[in-house]
Length: 291
Image 1 (tube, rainbow, N blue to C red):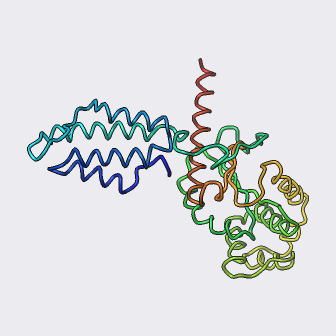
Image 2: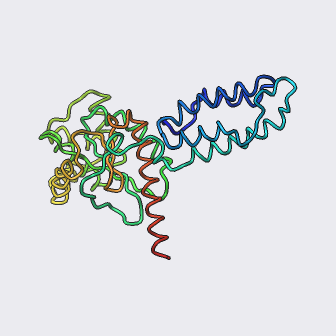
Image 3: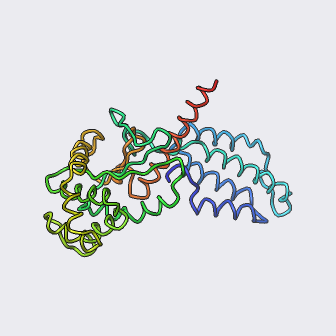
């Protein structure tokens, strides 16, 4: 995560400097320079704060300890400095380089969520989208570590006439209680097996192959509930301001995509940042209410 976490190289430099018996100060100064320009420079305010900390040298490590310098004392001071750096790195992600209008967008009109007590993360997707398919493994991994105060919701987007069939498939599976097996099956059919889903008959065959009776499929696919949910999904593009998928929305307020964030992993990093932001805001509101 740019501007937030120490890279492996920076950490390696720091460890080498701590364990070196000679030339320690020179190496740690190299570490300072690398840290400043690679980690904190994107965040001007914190970059300046760190620069001042290092220039004024409040911890007093030797300018040139040499082979006979008091390296034990110097290492203790540097460990204290590391603790200070860690505290800086734990500053809320608002200082991590994620910016509204760049890695994420504010939704013009905040949308309602499924829970008032939890932070909602909503995925807009299409079964025919290869990018959505490739996001699935990373998303599943993220879901395994999802915080308890976060609720995850999927919403099939409809940005074209052919997308409606897939949206109705999603809601049919949801109402039949077979989403767990059908969600992956529909993705695999299109992207792993390379077989199209062009009509209801083909869709019905897939459901039947996964244990759903023909009658249950017909009754549910044509039901008022599925039609209503599909009509609502058709409005999602304008409500959430999306022009493509996959897109992730946090608490009905913020939207991000792999294109904006820089990749699938980065998109989930942005989601984590926005979740933390919403969590902090909710804590502040709760505190204000009790006071």
